[in-house]
Amino acid sequence: MIEAIDVHKSFGDKEVLKGISTVFEKGKTNLIIGQSGSGKTVLLKSLVGLHDVTSGDIRYDGNSFLELNNKSKKRLRQDIGMLFQGSALFDSLTVEENIRFPLDMFTDWSMEKRRERANFCIDRVNLENANAKFPSEISGGMQKRVAIARAIALNPKYLFCDEPNSGLDPRTSIVIDELIHEITVEFGMTTIVNTHDMNSVMGIGENIVFIYKGEKLWEGTKDDIFHVQNKALEDFIFASKLFKKVRDNNGK
Image (cartoon, rainbow, N blue to C red; front, side, top):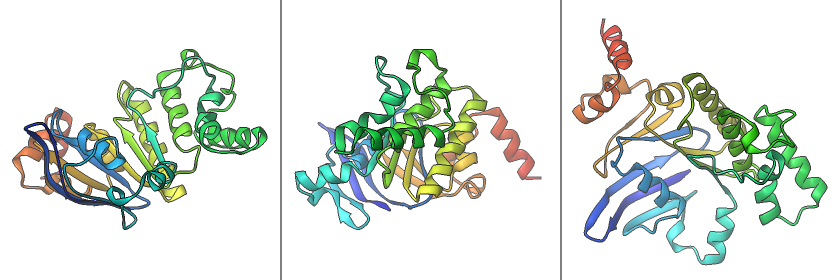
């Protein structure tokens, strides 16, 4: 579980986050949604420690991240997996080497054990026979699977995903969403997904936080979201004609 408690973040005179409080639950896919410029990326980076908050607190399983010393923060970061928007794979490394990278960096395991763990992750994301391929030799969807496998290599307690479906076709996006949800439940992780994709919201949105101009305007589940009386959220959801049709059909 990760808690944000009255989190404020400013850059100079500009306040980007304005007192956000919420709880991201363990074993669920927690989504942060909002338009570009709403502050959702700043919130995600603040939660993971890439931004220092101006005021407020962030707690990991009850422990204040802000009160940890550098050694404790380093230890906590080894419990964090990160899935970046552009996959962020190393072009010069093979699939197996990319996945093994955090194991090489942060463990003193034998090479045999590191390869065994890398291959477990490869199998878990259905990338059989891809070990020796380079990122340029595989599709965008496969690259995203490699990035997920690398993110879970250290068996993290917490998984952060920044726009995981960026650049993917709708069918591949669904596959990636389902994979993120499956490993969240399977490994009991606290997963936080930053997205503006309404298909992701309706597919895996077990706990959804809507950010608007730096404030939390709504929180709920995918089952609640069509029944909300909030103009900013309605404008965000129903920007797509498809979801307007879903709303109209639900209202009948």
